[in-house]
Length: 206
Ligand SMILES: Cc1cc2nc3c(=O)[nH]c(=O)nc-3n(C[C@H](O)[C@H](O)[C@H](O)COP(=O)(O)O)c2cc1C
Image (tube, rainbow, N blue to C red):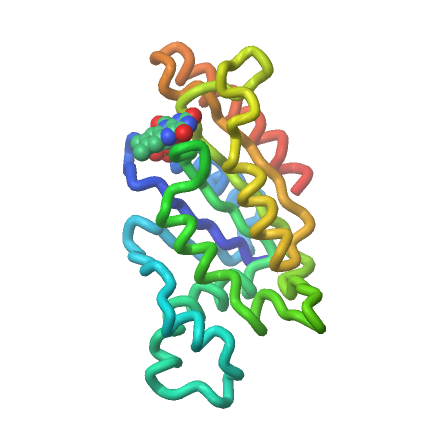
């Protein structure tokens, strides 16, 4: 029995393509893995604050030296890290915003990358602590990024996500991108169908 962490980050609800694709994935996953435990978090309902000076100071303070106030500063971050570390697989659905990720998901990452919990350092050499974990990102994008697109090479989303999760030790990172969602209804439908197909074939190998 495994544990799958599923996090949606689009501020849209029913109209969100990334949520739709993630829910397709989860429905099939639950059918194939009925005994798995699924932890779900919706970033629409979890307001993750930007990190502060107090947060940074608390992050770099040894656990046994934390004051009650500092513990409180890290409280939400601790919950997010706990559920991440409890999972052997993580599915994140993430819209593309301004060629990167929404600020809500950036705040999530900033709270996940924690000294002594998800990474450490030995004489200035950083080491990720979140090993043996698989991460899948399902992204939703308004335009295309192929070689014929004027936006080819503008994708700062996949590299940013890859580096952040590699930094904390994850080596098994996959992406399913649904592109061209805002280029008219026909393009949206065919992009969703294509991504659903990728989701279904990805499932069996994950
Ligand atoms: C604030 C904002 C910024 C966006 N920036 C981009 C962008 O840089 N590149 C892109 O391809 N699409 C962009 N889009 C389009 C979204 O990625 C697209 O609508 C996608 O479907 C959003 O995911 P969702 O349907 O799950 O909410 C943007 C949309 C919004 C609302």
